[in-house]
Each structure stands twice: as C-alpha cells, then as structure tokens.
Length: 55
Image (cartoon, rainbow, N blue to C red; front, side, top):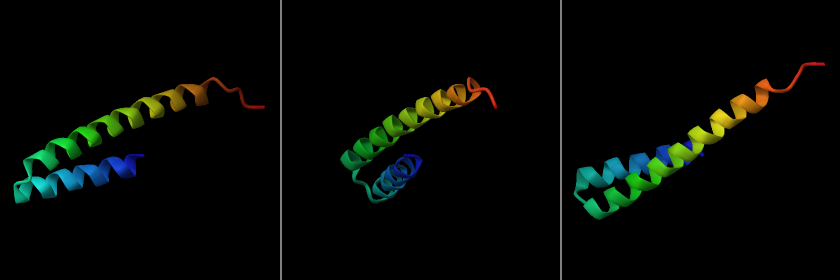
C-alpha cells in the first residue's frame, strides 16, 4: 500500500510540474488517504504483534 502512495505522490508532483492542477489535487488527495490508511494499519500491526507471547 505504501507503494501506491508513493506512485500517486509522484503522479501529483509530475502533474504539478506540467500544470495539470485538477490531476494534482486528485492524486495528492488519494496519496494522502492511502498514506493514512497505511499508517493506521502499521500501528495496529505493531500493537497486535506485541500482544502475542513467545512460546
């Protein structure tokens, strides 16, 4: 999922350079949403991993 975030971020940067502002807004918002989803899932996996006891 982090890979898709970086892809949309690069699309937003390239579109910003060429002046496609509608595409910039859409790609940047998608990248932001995917980043926060990735961040939440990462934090959940950290806490889930700590709750397990080693055998």
